[in-house]
Length: 130
Image 1 (cartoon, helix red, strand yellow):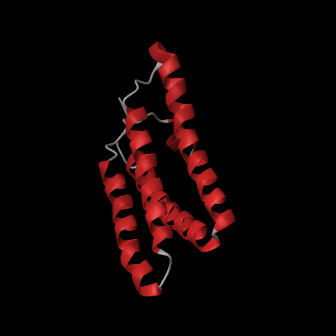
Image 2: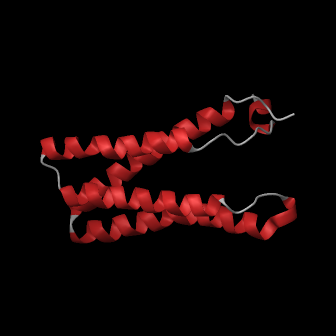
């Protein structure tokens, strides 16, 4: 089992997980409409997910590796900051309107969870780097 975590692998394409996350956000809209949930919550969740993806895309353009530690550090901190920023926005909104905040958080969490699950699956099922 230890070999699975210690074996370096090439970074897979992020597009399938991102498209799956986008599909979750898109499919949440009809659910919100039918269930009578606040559309502002769906909209906020969708905007937060899109903004986090845009920041992730921007950060992914920074090079990684021992030869560029500063860029790798900015990328790592920036990727962590995305989730913290989303959490802060959702909490602030939830303090003024619980239904909107919780709805936005659920939309974002579902899209992010599917994207993370597919990203990890594609990484750990790929062939080890040689």
